[in-house]
Amino acid sequence: MADKTQHIELPVLHDFVCGERGMEAEARQHIETCEECRFNISWLRWLVEAGAKEKGYEPPSWALANAEKVFKLQKPGIVMIAKEIVATLVYDSFNEPLPIGVRRRDLPARQALYRTDNVQLDVKIELGEERGGGLIIGQIAADQGSMNVSGLRIELTQQGQVVGNSRTNALGEFIFQDLPKGNYELQVVLSDTMVKLPPLALNS
Image (cartoon, rainbow, N blue to C red; front, side, top):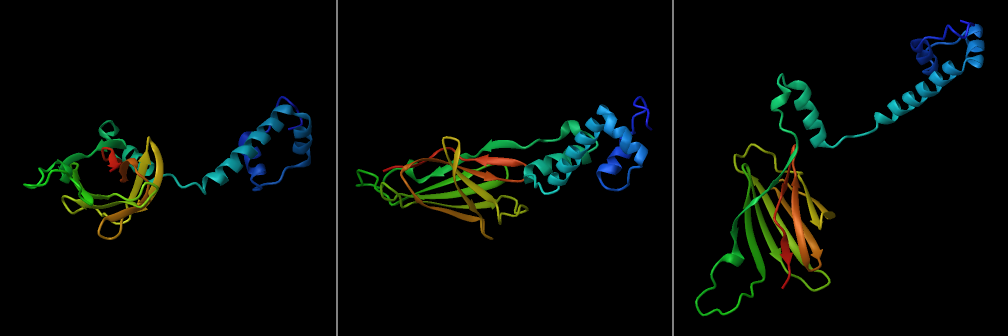
């Protein structure tokens, strides 16, 4: 192995870098005089360190779901990749006609119901003071009852930036408190889908 033209094989260098085997004196001498083998040792060490760090990385649930579908199905062409769905407004208390004799709407809360193909979202909005105190209370229900609605991540955003996070309880309920006046968006993070609601206004 002392001949520079006869470089040490990568599997041997890999085992040496990982500490799984020693290196004979002749091989060590070759490494000292061979720039290519020293380079191979350098990037193998980087690769081993990167692999060790990778073990501590937790990918998001939607990425795992996509990967499982791609590699487990026999026909990857039909795999549905994670997507965004905008929920449809079914009911809004502000759209209801005022009772006879009432000239203005001055209700303490607004009730709205949204729906997707298999999820229903009931949202209640209460106004607070100018600097805070507003509430967004909601509940998620699966239309077919097969989806677990406990522990779902709910994100509150403004202009695409997440400004709050919440988790649903066992009943699919969640709450955001002490919200200043403004326009907000809600999005529900499912395993392979992001369900978004149209903008919600916390204004007088």
